[in-house]
Amino acid sequence: MKTTASRVREHISGLLSEFTPAEVTRDLELPHGGVVRDVLKDMALRGEVKRMESGRYRYLGFQPAWGARRSIKPRMYRAMHVKRAFTAADIAMLADAGMNFTSKVIRQLLDEDDIERVGKKRNRNNQPIWIYRVRHLDRFYQKYVAAQRSGKEGGS
Amino acid sequence: MREDVFIPTQNYQKLQSLCEDLLSTSLGLEMATVVGSTGRGKTTAAERLIVVDPRAVLIRFQDWMTPRVLMREIAFILGGTRPRSGAGAYELIQSEMALQRRIIMVDEVDRMTLRHVNTLRDLHDALKVPVVMIGEEMLSRLIEQERRIKSRVAHQLRFEPLCAIDVVVFYRNAMGQAVTPKQAAQLAKHSAGDFRIVVNDAVQMEKKMKASGIEAITDELTAEVCREDDGKQGA
Image (cartoon, rainbow over all chains, first blue to last red; front, top):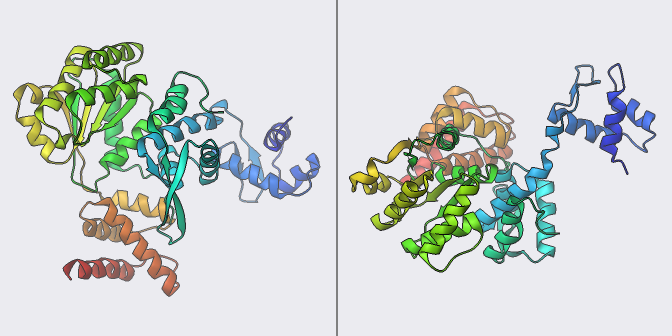
């Protein structure tokens, strides 16, 4: 099953002129334009599309190297292993990952019992945030860091 | 203020190019030192480097580590097991290095004894492993104690105090604010090169901006933040 992003990409790559999110939403018969706007925002950040002054977008082309998200998870595991105790922001900062994706990976690791919550602190914006700890450093290293290095997918 | 952004300071960029140099050459002199005061971002730069580049590994020295434990830790970080004996650890390091050449970065080397540093020297000599030793100013004195170590250190990188450009990049990336060169210079001077003070100043700045409804950083606000902190330090 195709994702919305790949449907959008397939559609806009065939367009000869500039386009608006509303036009793409209408052409793909999506329920509302918010999804397309988000997809185009991501694409603009990657340099795949360019937002013109008129508010319309121009498709510039896709490079497979942009799908580098696969390399982010191993980075996050390495960051967790090296930090031992960390906040989500620490990992996002070291691994160049988004906060949403970092939180998602942290939730997965919490479910797997590979990391645990050890306390709360306030961040610089005075909001409470969790501090996590790798439960067993050596096991974590074997399961995630070493496994990724040897080309196997760590964890489930 | 965003806490999830990494600021590629000039020091970090120098460390990155040093590691590239070490990996690309094999002249037999691949020991390097990274020296700098506290708060200059040595450890964060090293952590970032090993996270983005799997060819580098980082070992943080702790006081309880004997030279044998240090070898076992290096073996573990490279090969994933801790052989009981020093010889076993050495063999594992050797086989891992034969598979892929990697940089061994060791943090807190200034707390090591000469025996530990000589263990690293042995690794470097026997296996041609690039070794980067990171520490505070004491590290330079430790290295100078033995000529055979000093002569092997081909690269010496000093982590300089944060400069105005780093401050500009920090405010832009973490706060989305533009600071003028004058303000950046003032903030850099006030921090005395310590990244933690730059961050604290930015937190104060943001609080004041929220309280007074100001949307852009002004010269007066910068002066106030720097002055207020001086008052606290003096008290």
